[in-house]
Length: 361
Image (tube, rainbow, N blue to C red; front, top):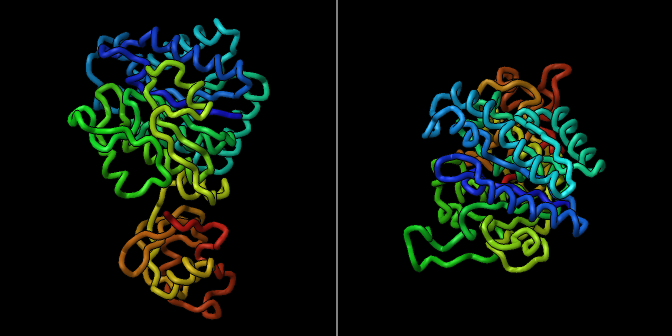
């Protein structure tokens, strides 16, 4: 089976920010073991910025975006050189794939990236995926590789996403602060209570934390992908995880999965605006699986264009769906509340077609 392995910055670097050769060798050994067992691993690795900092004499993660990009440009080849060397010692060819949010948000680029990753697997290459931090300024400032790993897992049709970190998994409380915190071994569904429990703090060297891992697990679960969050230092962690043994926190996939296109709409396309609907339209979308018509729209926020992703809000102001609009914000405001027979000639009957609409969990 295809297994996506995501490793965080703190799991492959020392406290000083330098690449930890022992950790990289341990990871390489685990990936090689999966290959020898007949699996197809894909590695999603953070660490380009952390790897570049020591080379430039920088001791703390910069806040300036331009400097972050420069540091990543230095660190990415250093990181890939280590991975290629370690994997090469096991006879494995590594292939670098650098992605940006646009590679998931633009459908044509998404399909191209998927084709490339699948071709690499067909050739027996182990893809090593990272953000293209030298250009993805928004993602450097606000994102992390956890969500990208979940989207990559869906993209390549993986059955399992293993998220390696510096903690044993999700606990009932922060184990760094509460000695009585216990490990949560299995999660049936990621809900608001669990997301609150996860908190938000990551490490000084990385940008993620347990909250971002749970958010990624939710994406993967909706894609039908199992997720395990585990400590990268656990002996034989990858083999034990793939074998289904109790290692870390396992998040079960949903019994009803979203089609790949709807996963792309729900989680890969950023929202460009909001459409507010009345109660009748909300019920039609939620209960009857209908398309959104102009008659049910009461307002639009933002400056979106046709084919952009928008959130759909009910009268209470709560977002309950997301979809691709067939109207720009300006055009939609001009037809708000109109019945289909009152629309201008040639205007789309659907504001959001049901095939382009995802009801949010």
